[in-house]
Image (cartoon, rainbow over all chains, first blue to last red; front, side, top):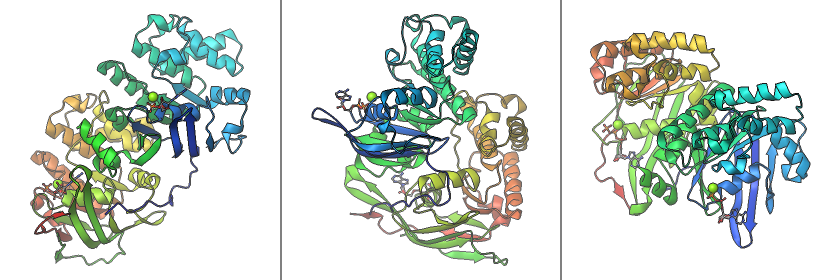
Length: 266
Length: 247
Ligand SMILES: Nc1ncnc2c1ncn2[C@@H]1O[C@H](COP(=O)(O)OP(=O)(O)OP(=O)(O)O)[C@@H](O)[C@H]1O
Ligand SMILES: Nc1ncnc2c1ncn2[C@@H]1O[C@H](COP(=O)(O)OP(=O)(O)O)[C@@H](O)[C@H]1O
Ligand SMILES: [Mg+2]
Ligand SMILES: [Mg+2]
């Protein structure tokens, strides 16, 4: 017997902040995403897990409007935005992302200019959004770095001279500098050693609790998802095999693939 | 299959139930074995506000499974769990995840044997968290947290320490303080007294009596049922099945 199907929300009247519907994306002959839908509610952390190549990063890049899918729509419940964000042009996307969508990549090279100063990397975000006054740029960059628990005396060092954990904090500061509605995290702690990883996760958790930032967190590490996420989506070969509350998916996984994934980790 | 038998009833105030369970069935499908395991089948019972229902039965009979199914950590395969929330009746068996998450923050609590501590979060913050999530200020939440840590007998020098290194009993006290800080409308309890000393057990029983008189409905499994004997309104005894595996 299979579990009873879930019904649409009845008590929670809040609209989802992010709604992605029927997203498919193919690269040449590789299907990275095949009809994927997701809703993310304000203030929650949605975790995405799955083996490598399952389409997690592709999904996040689409949420960051870096790419356009072959089909599907993406809506953000914020003022003055079209029903489908994929209809925006490059410039509109850039402005929207600078203000409302922050992203932290696994690889800091993707998110940072490695030889520019760390403070400058953060300030770049503010510049795109139109801030020009030098002292304001510097103050705001510093406060974002502080919120990310970056050691301020090193704020002018270029990321290339910093440890992996510190580089991730620079990415994070850049991502949150303009208090975005959404923070996207693609394996933010993968590759860091365990104790550094725990510290970075602490910072994320604290930011999430203090600012109620809506987050989408991709990780293949179930422990990371367990401590951070409210709900989780399990992906395999470009499709969602299962989704649910974190405790439910980990304690009572329904799909054979999820059971294998969960049991392999225990 | 386990069957409930209402062995004792001394409930006179007939409030309409807050929870009505009907035909509830839970099986675990274990794909790697190509098998499923029936935990319980066709359970029906109700709980009213202020009622205290004791779940009993031998090890492995499905007590924890039932509580987790009501909390929706486990997904049922059949039946209904009608819950009369402040915002209307909802079937927890099929409710959307987001509704379940909402109810867990505001109305339905689960007290287990184990604390899920996060590294580098002080005990007082762990305890205060439900209040913070419910919108209380940090100061108020911490004050209340310290009150409950004290009530359950956690030494004051531990309040700001990280519970990951606490003894089993100390962790359990933190866990209880956190689980009971916010009065819920329905409280599920899975052997909350298992590793507690006498003082903490007394504090817990006092808090439960207090919550009961405030109208909180409770369903619990207790290692030492004598502790809570005076609170019990009804007893659901789960009975083991002859053979639990179904192909
Ligand atoms: N997540 C799970 N996946 C598969 N089987 C499970 C799961 N949880 C429980 N079971 C099985 O369901 C049955 C009931 O277990 P449960 O933990 O509910 O018993 P219990 O009555 O609480 O026992 P105890 O008195 O030992 O706590 C057992 O056979 C158990 O192995
Ligand atoms: N820019 C790209 N060009 C070609 N193929 C890509 C590109 N991005 C992703 N893919 C392919 O799409 C699939 C999903 O990749 P990805 O989203 O990176 O997976 P994950 O993040 O889950 O490991 C893989 O087969 C990958 O090789
Ligand atoms: Mg990836
Ligand atoms: Mg049990």
